[in-house]
Image (cartoon, rainbow, N blue to C red; front, side):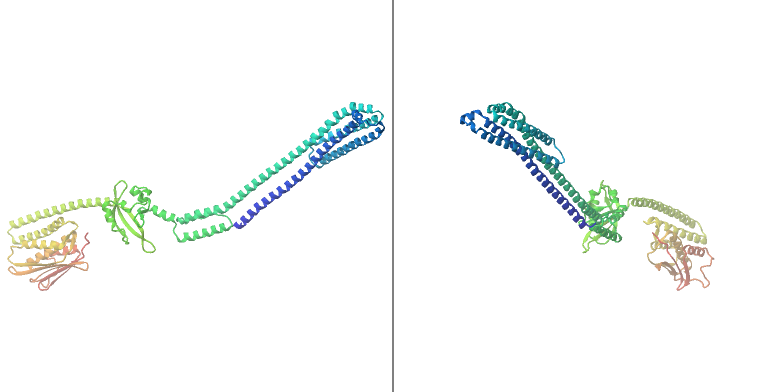
Length: 610
């Protein structure tokens, strides 16, 4: 039912109810008014008849007394000759009074009988009054006969009539008629009072009924008003509450209104709007669930860098309740040193990520990987910051443990390299002592070559334990030290041999540094031994460069060069066998050719160093 129909029907019903009560009240009051007039007229007639009946009886008795009063007759010296005329006149007056009494008595009886026949309820007072009237009628008949007898006696003897009046008529009148006349008057008044009381009770009943009807109408009106209020206000309240929840982002809310009025149509349209919004918009509840389920600490600020939103991960990490953080400046999350650092990134609109430390409620620091992004309004102005922090305490501890372990390993490796270098130095020393002891030139040469090979390896270990990083050595620096050691070995040689270098910065790990250094050692020593005559002058050149992801090494001299039939695959000497072995270890490519002397070039791919 439409809302307008409800309102019209409700007001129409209340109006008809009030009109019905008014018409009923007017009709019933008119009935009571008419009955009151009728009862009043009847009561007045009864009282008038009772008064007139008493008056007529008194009048008849007075006329009789007046006629028979001896002293009066004597005072006016009545002529007895006229007695008959006076008797007839008095008799006529008495009979007239008696006749009038009889008429009024009949009228009173008729009125009372008619009233008792007209009403449904017979009152005891009406029956009693009617019985008194019947008794009065009987006694009146006796009184009438006594009056007749009085006039008959008086016509014969005035004294006898006088005596009959005083002895019989007057006593009978006083003892039988007067009480009944008085009783009739009392009962008539009682009947009138009873009728007035009854009419008053009816009026009171009508008043009560009107009051009840008015209260009932008021209650019905209130009930209708409450029904209308409920049918309007309750759906509107539901609509308002649901709109508020949807405005808060809970797009899954719907209005439950089962009505066909205008509000029901509005609710259906509102639900359709919410359904369309839920299809194209994420609900606040959905976003809140995502935020609360995040393992990282989320802090959202306004344009004044005051905290407006935190998630549960933030509260757990920092030990604060949500109300303790909301409205506080972002700086409260950092110590003084970090606050100075954070000032520089607030207004930067780029997304930043760096490591920093949060300060908990208890004053402890929590290392976090901190990232922030600036939220912008539609006009491009800053709306606030979104800060995300991951607790990296475990990672930091793991890094510390790893660094500690690495430091221990580096110390251990340095010690190992140092001991290996020392052991190789001992071997080199022993070979030197053996050189000093031998008189065989060939043996001396072999021992010196071995000593140089040992020194080459020892030098690698020395560079490693002296380096800050034990995983690689700076090979260009190492080569200079190696060439110096080779030169010092042949310092007593009669030949004038110089060594030139062109070295680029190259880093090699130990797996490639040792075979590469041994290979260069063999090539340079071979140049010393075979490229030049016993008293000649010469030059040895070493070039190291890095091109296209490879290391290129060229060892050349300006000596006699290689024989025509020479190849590096030949294994006629220990030196060439060592060279071929080292080339395989490096997985290198080697080329030997003559160009203004001997040229040996090899290249290999360096392993990655850390």
